[in-house]
Image (cartoon, rainbow, N blue to C red):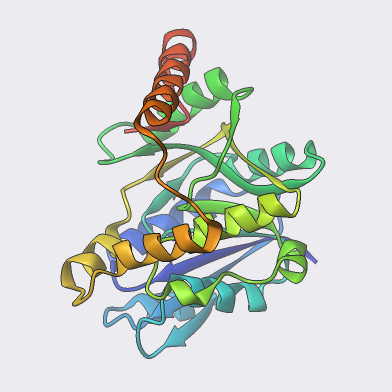
Length: 261
């Protein structure tokens, strides 16, 4: 069995995909892994790129949605772990090794995500990553990042696949997080690994061209499924203050946070 199956859903945006794949190949050493592309109807050269580089590319004639694409990739995964990442991600040296080292220490791991900086790539990413992980390697907090999720592939046998009822996308990752938590698995973000995220480039294009408000519909669906209600004003203020304190403490003592912009 391979160590990790890296699953990348795509829908055009080849310029991001190419950078993502090249960063994986450059910075993933000493691990047996495979890259699986699930292409949702790209009209650019994305499918040809994966085929030319002898990587599996599952081609859909149209956009079947994020959850469907993830599930297609998982069904073909040969790795002990499945790492689902957006195509607008740049990974850095030892990213996957660090995620594996972290997950091996956990008793019942759910989703594991790395520390992230979002936005324009206007800095020297490898130098920054080395400095970041040096400061943040022991920092962790409960939660996950939907743009990079490493999950034990066996979890999908136990918990099931992602809920394809969320359609195009948004909400299916949080739904799975709750399903894992309900089954006793804890999800974590770790500062021992670092990636750059340009910022959901594909979904932004889809939202701008969509004829329906699928984002709000999916959020409504998620809230109804899990009985999530709007918290009273005072509780929201307390929770926001706690997050601010955590952010400020990390920034003051480490110079970084787990999700940076």
